[in-house]
Picture 1 (cartoon, helix red, strand yellow):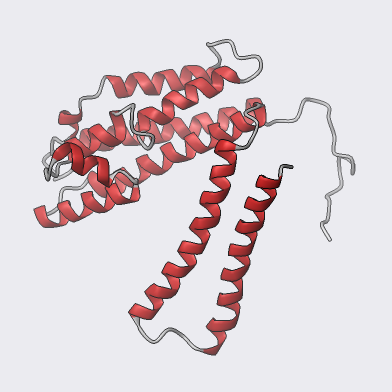
Picture 2 (cartoon, helix red, strand yellow):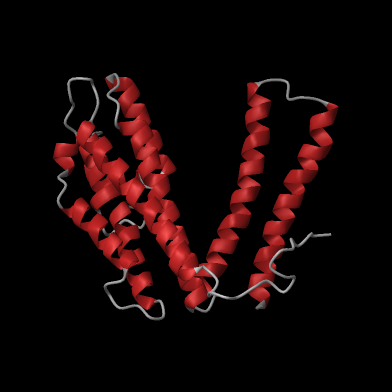
Length: 242
């Protein structure tokens, strides 16, 4: 293990230990006096956790050898980002709300997706579901977009040993990419009679379901033990950790 990776893991471990120490010593003594203090405690814990996670992500992106293990890790990250994005957009954008609420929700969604700055630069004050969908679903240059995750998945799956270009996971990614290409961002903004964006909801649900199925297929094909192998402690015993 490289010194940089050891340092990153130590930083992350230290952040977690500080958070645990705070929650273990402060909580029994007294509760926060109000919302402001509670928000400050939560923000501090989130900040410390984020620093450790970003450090670890930096080590993974810049210092790890990009072998099969790294590829599998990246596949997992891309699937998780796709699942998180489709779930977030499904919860925030598929129901029509009053204009003021809609604007606040769209801006908050962009912040959560770390895409608020590029959105403001491109739209110059315009707030719309179609513009957000264009950026977060279809923009291949945005590393937080859904199409970007699918492209990285395509490349990663092609780098796995034994990849044929037509394996089931690769076909599944191609099918989802085709579904996106056939969708029009402007059409996704259309509102049905029940005050919902039905086409957007349908697309997000289909992609979310497909990504979950993809994760199950990859687990079954890439992470399963070969047939006939048994744990060192025997087939009928359960290992008990001390």
